Length: 202
Image 1 (cartoon, rainbow, N blue to C red):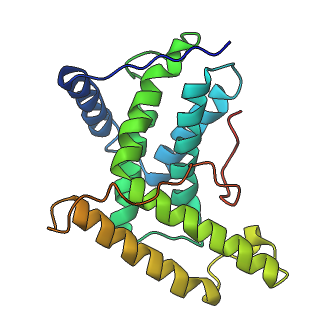
Image 2 (cartoon, rainbow, N blue to C red):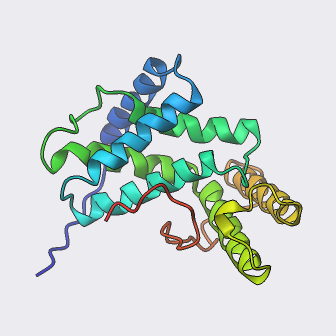
């Protein structure tokens, strides 16, 4: 029988995790993009070896989305946007996280919270990327192509540029551009069947 438990992080709790994220970013400042992505990927691989609660598995799936978008040659984020994603991933490149991942079950709890904080910050990037992946899948199938082998196809560029532009506009509105709250935008499930994730956690 499922058990529903809700909890709220106080400002003090959020401050604690924010400081942990900032410390991780400072620690990983010397790491390359490939090293950061590889470390986050290793966390997913290790998590897949153990039975984790569903609420943690769901958030690890969101981490998979961030990793996929940073590696996807077809998406090829502008450098400033890529740095935003890498800045979110550095927490998972720091071996001294709040709860060691070797602790059974609870080891990934702090990672799940950190992912939730990062996803909130990068929600428009994830939404745009998922839409891009769905478009690529549909168009590739229609053209008789393998979506995984499309790369930077010319017919993808216009749609990609449109989605990146919309992503920037939505992010600017939310950060005080004077156009109101963006909470009305539909949020995707972060488990898009069309996204080339590195793995499926569950």
